[in-house]
Length: 417
Image (cartoon, rainbow, N blue to C red):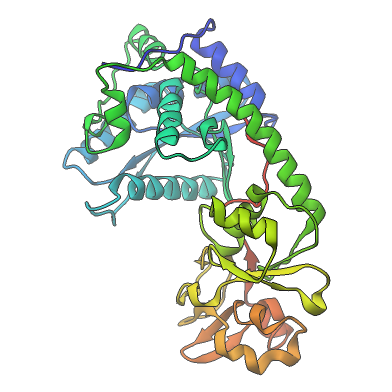
């Protein structure tokens, strides 16, 4: 039995337009992308987004991902592309070729899907990516957060806008019931694909969806909105504190000046400096925020700043850095640094590490920072450390590296409807 539907007094098009108005402003002729699985929710999203974009002089690109995890997935993806074409929607088929069945399947598939969608948006020059999460998805997410004891901010569930390095992820259907979306498609004579994974009881979300005694989705939705408003206020306070007390350097470290830094703000800083998608939480971070002693938490070391000024130096834990990767344009090393430009064959990108001892004359940065900097090598030969200007301007001109964590330390405050 499905969860109780969240009703809305507005028809889907009006609800969609109201949501988009909250998430703007957009360009004069907005170019949007939408992730379309072929299910009812994402097909409805594509239709609503197409109509909204056209009304504003813009366009929509539908992105259909084939995970390749089921024998039928390729045919279903191709069918979805053809259905979109019949509706006058430009569509592109994306294939994930390296996913394998196994542990944490849902999480790995989701990460791979968002990665390939973001890459496709970047290639198309589109910054706004829409996904079809609706009111029941939001209620399920809130319940999952409750079960995982994620804290008050977790109860806000999914934000309407999530900022990434390459795209803004937009969820304009969070207050729309899936029943309303399906009714819209039936009225238009549009068919959709039913994904059997939505009924797979091995995953928590389908188990919640198939509860024999459904919880009141409207009550949960109202709770998420209240929690969302509180989270927005909290994140605005975090951003103010970070701007006042923290200096983030392009070399990927930070100076934390004396003062009261909220635990959530500190967790966001640790997340960015460690290159992880999620920051630590709980008593450990609260203790660091309260005591400010030399400590290592979440892959980040906190040390006295010394000659860099009053307060603390926050720097990546060297022993947890990733290994070297091919130095090609677009490569991301250690979840922190993006190689925007690279010239040359047979090069690798990794930590400066032990070679930092030889480069102290090139920088006044502490050794703890130098060792964590990205370096370009050919075999074992150090070619360049672009962030130090080593060995010279001409050598560094072939490479451009930027500190680019997967999520901003403090983006726009949480937005919920």
